[in-house]
Length: 86
View (cartoon, rainbow, N blue to C red):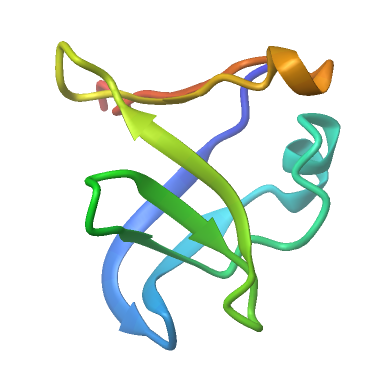
């Protein structure tokens, strides 16, 4: 499946504001509402909820531009976050 997530540059508690279709994200096994995002010290993109609990950590792609989460060991689909061409 494909879910649209907008990572904004608007500061908020814990990072930067996110807009997303939470029902769509739940279908991808991201159970809680995504509130914010930030890049951690290792360069990974982290999505957090309103209590700052990490919901998903995504590793930067070696080729740059994309982030991914390998979750096959958790019997879940792997995820890729790519920039929208629009």
